[in-house]
Length: 260
Image (cartoon, rainbow, N blue to C red; front, side, top):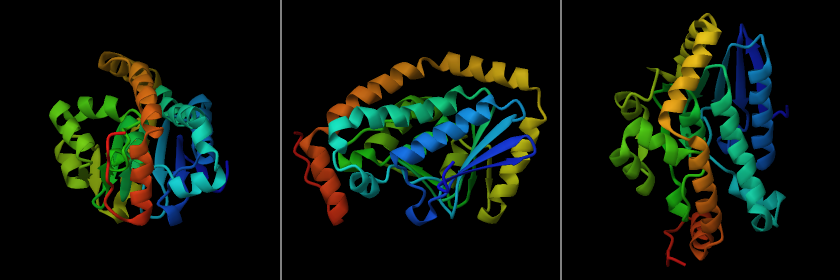
């Protein structure tokens, strides 16, 4: 792993940490691939019984790092499908992990960061945490399974509100909606997360895996949802509205979307 993705073992729990605090742990393609590798390794490690996904420095993940991505790959628009496949590979690594997964959320879980937190089996959050699907603000749609998880976790009406209006769901609201396994002060987040991980790692691994698989099977087909998001997002990424949305974001002004 790079220094931007850290992996540590605590007991029988693997803790995977996004380590870009200066950028609120936002993602590049390389970081996404490193995260995916760390999660796959944890899934295949017989000594690991639980996986924690978290971020360093007061935030979980602020989504894709557009500035660094365009700087590193000026020809990004010519191979958007490769980026989409890499990001979806990360979601699949979370969902397919046979061990219980916990998102330990402090501060922002925005855009694809929100999708990662929602894809985990359980979430522990600090009082400063929030989840926000901000894609529409730059002319995009959720592309990490958000259109799959939110209707199932919140119901259709709240999911529409969260996605179409880019509503920020703060920790107190997330807890009231039943999305959190625990809500604690920021200073207690690590302790609360590892306490929950300890309970899971001491549980019956075969039963936990079987229960996870049965629950997810009852929700429907996430692969179809990811495919729909992939197709929709690739169309949107080539629109004039996205160019306008990104320019407006970079210039800190309101976008003027034209529907083209």
